[in-house]
Image 1: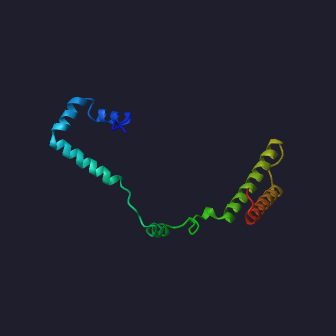
Image 2: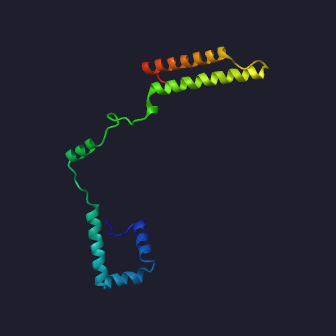
Image 3: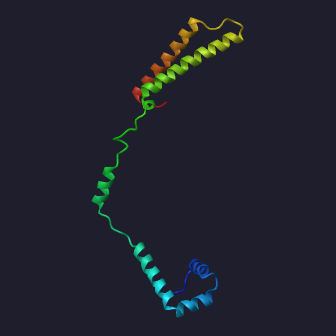
Length: 141
């Protein structure tokens, strides 16, 4: 087995010594203060690298203190499927009336009246009802 350093370690040492290797290494060999500082750094690094064994029960108690996604649900009025479905139904109803009005105006006819509004309302309610049944049944979109 060889005590030679690998290339990455040599590059790190060279860079740390500002590539003035001979003079800096000679100083390290001769200077007790630098050797003592290096020994302190080595001991600190070794101590920080050691693993701390944590009791699994402590980890479980810490994890239990956090709210579980299954136990909590963020409050949002928009998170209600019924409200979202109703808003979608209203949007479909409004868009139905708008499209009917645009088609009537382009054809040169009168603006949509109560029958178009009724059809729009009927389409919106039908969409809301279909969407609610789909959500209750649990089928994806």
